[in-house]
Structure formats: structure tokens, C-alpha cells
Amino acid sequence: MHRGKGMKFVGDSRIKAEGKMPNVPKDYSEYPGKTEAFWPNFLLKEWMIGAVFLIGYLIVTVAHPSPLERQADPTDTTYIPVPDWYFLFMYQLLKYEFASGPYNVIGAIVIPGLAVGALMLVPFMDTSKERRPFKRPLPTAFMLLAFASIFYLTWESVANHDWEKAKAQGAIVEEAQFDPESEGYQIYAGSSCIGCHGDAFQGGLGPALIDSGHTPEEIIDIAHNGIGTMPADQWKGSDEELEVLAEFLAGLKTGE
Image 1: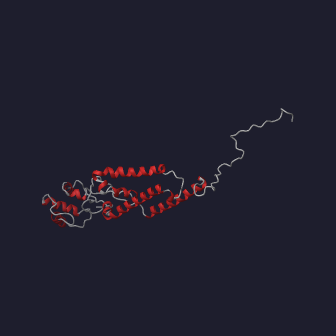
Image 2 (image 1 turned 30 degrees about the vertical axis):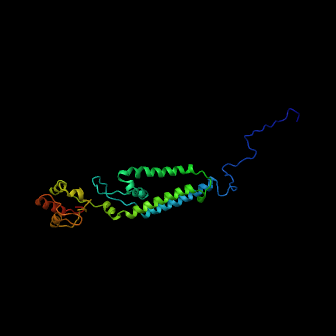
Image 3 (image 1 turned 120 degrees about the vertical axis):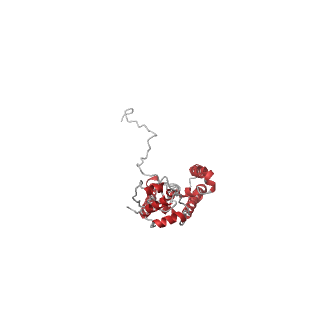
């Protein structure tokens, strides 16, 4: 080639001399235990842990399906609702004197708000690159405290709740067919009985009256003398009305 007529090469600092294969993670072997490639190392482990928990959750769901209760009755003031198991710790917290009654705001808003706020601030309070729990005392302490609190409150809620009573409250009771215009039901609706035994005889403070097994004479005796937790002298009407009511209640049968 003659001078001045050859090719000129221009270098560009934006182009690396050595090419790099796409989607190939950086070699982190020089930083053992401190970091790793997101794909596939970290993400694969996350998927594996997630699959284990998902399978375990499905097994628990199949083995212990959610129980069904009777249709909700807004007029039943004796029914005590219980949250799902993952909110039992909050349910138990609201039972304590310092977090209930006039201090309900503390138990429902202030304490949960402080707990959630503290957990949200942990990443900003601890900026260490260490991954070992014993070298990160602050977040480790927060998580252990949160776990211990939730575990203890959940345990207390389960241990101190009357599950037999709750089961009876939510039990599905077959309804009896009756005429709401009948004289017996009109007497029942106008008495204090409906407040304890329900508008459809499903029970509440008192037991269900369907298939009670009592004769009219026994019902009259119970109305005057009481039975179990039912006190005596609850009937305030006339003897004639009580006889009609007793005949009506004794005839309440499932599916009839």
C-alpha cells in the first residue's frame, strides 16, 4: 500500500476488547458466602423452598378442610366469631386489659402499627452485607421477638378458647317446617323465648327447640320451674297460651 491510501483504525472506548456471553452470571467464587448469582442459584433455591411450603399447605388443606357453620344470623348477639388461625394472635391480644375496652385503639392500631413499622425499618437500620444470622444481631433479634410473640399469643388463644361451645354455636341445625302465621308461633314470637332460642328455634343462649323430645307437659313444667341454666318463672303469659305454645313446640320435628 502507498502512504496515505491505506485503512485507518479508530478505537472506541465503549467497545470492550473481550466479548461477554449473554446470560452468563459473574464468577462470585472470590466472595464465598457473601453473594451469589441471582439466576439460577438464588432463584432456584427460592423456588424449591416455595414448593415445599406450597405442598405442605395443600396437604394441611386436604387433611383439615375448613369447617362450615350455619347461616349467619345478625340477630344472634350470643354468637362469638373467631378469626382464622393466622389472626388468632391478634384475637388474643385484644383480650388483654391494656389492649381492650377503652384501650381498644392501642390493641387494634398502636401495637400492630409499631410492630409492622419496626419490621419495615430493619433493612434501613441494618445495612450489613453479612448473611449469617449471628453476625446480624438487630434483624435477628427482631425476627425472633416477632416469632415468639406470635407463637405465644396464638398458643394462648387456642388453649383458652371454649372450642366445644364455639362448635355448638356454629353447628348446622336442620330447620323444621312451621307456619309462622300459626297461633303457637305468634305466642312464641311475642314471648321472651325467642330471644334465647332463636326466631327459627335454632338456639342461641338456650338450646335448639327442634326435636327436643319433650312432651307438652314437660315443656309447661320447664317454663315454670326452669331446667339447667334456664331459671324458673320465665313464662309471663297466661296458662292457656302456654298450653298452646307447649303443643306447638312439642310438635317441632326436622323436615316436618
